[in-house]
Image 1 (cartoon, rainbow, N blue to C red):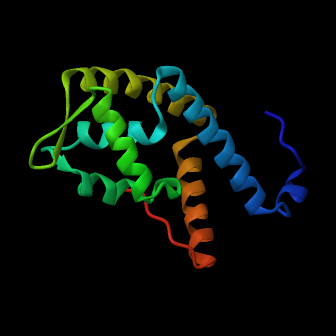
Image 2 (image 1 turned 30 degrees about the vertical axis):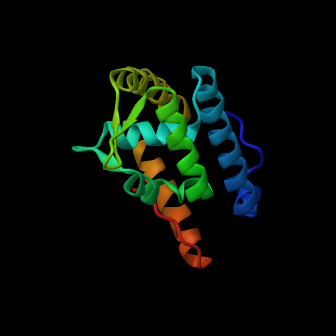
Length: 152
């Protein structure tokens, strides 16, 4: 790939711009691919939380983890959980426990395969060492600016 600037010029480039550009490209690509499958990124997060859980989870459990993702918020996550129930991917027991249906599990598996393809696409030509360094540098920027970020 051809970089936008020489190394001497790149080292003077603003992290705010490049982290924003990366966010926009990665999230836009992900959301576009998910939309082609008929779902949203927050709905995918809900399905993934339930598919990977050892036992059924409550709305509060799921929302507690997901509401901070990309500033989604509690109300949006409640709406997205409702959408997964309405679509028949998730059931909610009288006790408020959420579980994937057979249809939800099949859809999760389909979307998980696409997510794997997207991961490979994003990471093409990037070693694990480079990726690890990138995440540590980004976390240092968050720390240095007094920000807060967490991803389980």
